[in-house]
Every structure is written in structure tokens, then in C-alpha cells.
Image 1 (cartoon, one colour):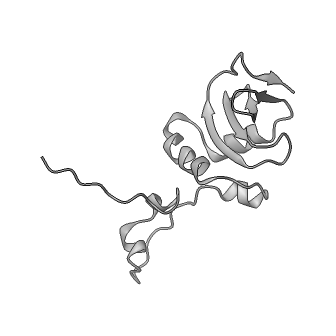
Image 2: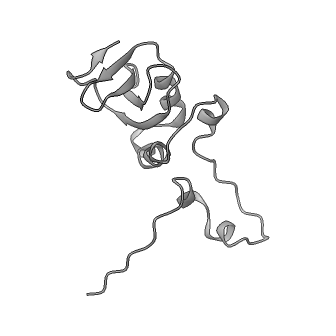
Image 3: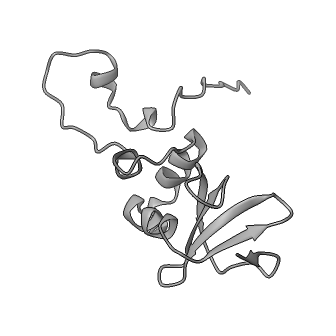
Length: 121
């Protein structure tokens, strides 16, 4: 059995590019919406991991708009285990993990209820 390992993409948004676009074809290719545009427009830093999770979890209803809404929520939590801060939107059930309590970089995004380990701040 032969196993082929493909190199990892250089950025989280790279898998969204079409092969003709990546090859530099001069033919017109439909533009694929870029992930992270809303966060960039708002001046919020994000990690590649965060962008990758947005792409992976889009089928589960985690959109960039919903993640931005969670990021902008007033109520926040602190996770003493990971030493990260979490913004949770109870209406959508989406949480965004950030590195600082205010104006932090978005690290990851997921859905679910707040953990009992999280401390409200």
C-alpha cells in the first residue's frame, strides 16, 4: 500500500482558491469569497487556525458573521485551564476564544454551551 502525503496549505484560505486561479490562468474565474474579511474590516486580528475553523465548521452554521457577533458580545468568560478569554453568544451558541479580555486576537471558534469551568468576567 502506498501512502501519499500532500503538503499543508500555506494559509487557511488557500484551499478555497480554484486550481486555475492558483495556476495563474488568464481566464476569468468566479471569485470565491475570502474568509476573514469581516474581522479584517473591523480591525480584529485572527489566527490561521481561526480561519481554518471557520471554513471547517461552516456546514454546522458557524459563519463569519455569527463569529463576529459572538466576538462583540459584552459578556465574556475566562478559562483558567487555557488562560484564554471566551466570548459566547447565547442566541447562536457560538463561542470565540481570544487572547485578551478586550481587543484580543481571535484564536478559534466553536459551538456549544459555556463550560462550567469558565469564569464569568
